[in-house]
Image (cartoon, rainbow, N blue to C red; front, side, top):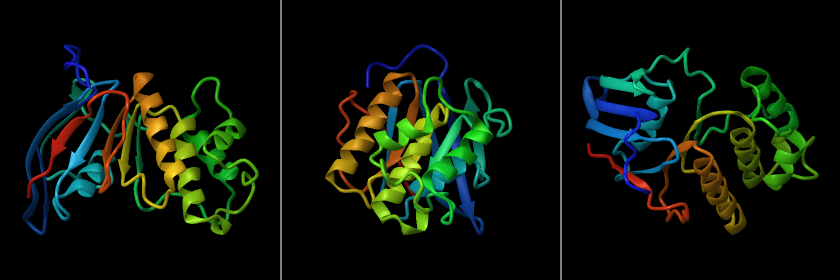
Length: 211
């Protein structure tokens, strides 16, 4: 990444922590993320990488510290639709098609200007599978359907937990392309990955997790 911007960070954590049964999962964490940045969340297994992303997505309550969104205390209702989480559970309804899943998501959060469901599904490699029930798709195709949701919805921050899982070489390149396009347009992303992330948009910010 380029030198840190002097503008207000998109997301900022101050002494952020999480406890499970009164035991800390990770040490108090400080970081900031600006628009246009990609952050790699690094750490050993069990260091709390997934926990952190789930907390930022509002799926877990933080144990302590502060979270700021655009310089103000993060309020889930105020940034609904601005933060999207993609984890091991893809959030797709198995009996619906990729197109139907996208229609539901778009009904809740709207769509990016100039994008349509058909073009987005084609761009992620699901041309011809738009109306196939998700339960009949391969693991890689399901992941592509979830990626289509990221592309279509107008979220600013993507939280991606192991986004390369179940993808072939072409799918991995697709994730990298989507990340580069998203950050180039002023979005931001936080990514966990056990593999090597090939990101050509600049040097990613690194957030190191410690138990």
